[in-house]
Length: 293
Image (cartoon, one colour):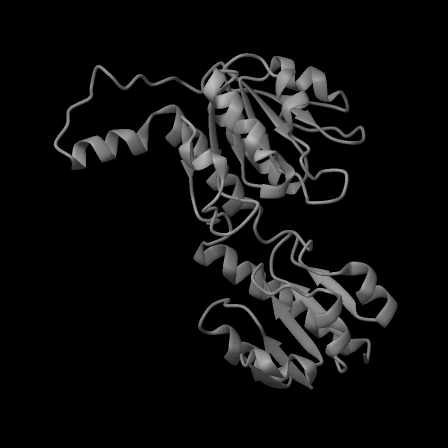
C-alpha cells in the first residue's frame, strides 16, 4: 500500500506511518497512492481525484474539508475523513489571542516601542471582563472558545443552526439576537454554499456599534469589502483574522482598513495540535486497514 503525505505535518510522522506501507512525500505519485494525507495546501478537486486511480482514502489533517470535492469522491468511491477533534484547543487559543491582542493594542504597543515611541496615553485598552461574547458556529472549537470566555468573566451567547445546550452560556438559533447583544463576535463557521459571505453588510447592520469581530473559521465566510467599509465607518470596532479568502491576502481591502489584526493561518500550527492530528490519522488508517479496504 502506498501512502502519500502531500502536505507538511511533523518530522516523525513519515517514520510512524511506515508500518502501514510505502510512504512518500513526492506529490507527483498521487496518481498511484492508495491513501493521501493532506492539510489545506493540497486541493483535491475533481481532476485531482479522477487522476488518482488507486486512491481509496483521503484524510484531511484538520477540520475543514472544503478543499476536497466531496461529490466526486463519493461518485468514485473514495473515502474522505478528517481529524475533527485535533485542532479545537489550538484554534480556540488563537481566537482568544486575537481577541486579547486587538483589545489591548498589543501589536501597536510593541511596534511603537520598537520605533522608540512611548504611547502610554494614546493607546487605550479595554477589558474582556463583563462583555458579551457571541460565538457564531457553536461546534467543538466554539465550545472551547466559550469555556475560555467564561474564564475571563464574559457572558456567552452562541449561534447554531439547530437547538443545542451548552454548559457555558445560552445557545440560540436566532442570529439577530446574538448579533444585537454581543460586544465580541467569534466566527467558527465551516465553508459551505450557505455560509459563503455569511457575514455580509446585511448581517453587519444588525450588530451593535463598535463590535469586535474575530475570525478563525474560514476566510470565505465573510465579505471582506463589507467588513472594511464597516471598520471605516465605525460600525465595527475591529477585525482580527487568521483566515483569508486568498493566501496570502495581497489584494484584500482589509489590508488598508483601520483596526485590523492579521495572522497567516496559524490556528492549528502548534506542536501539540500536529501530534493530535497525527494520532487521529493513524487511528483512521488502522480502522481502514482492519476493514480490509
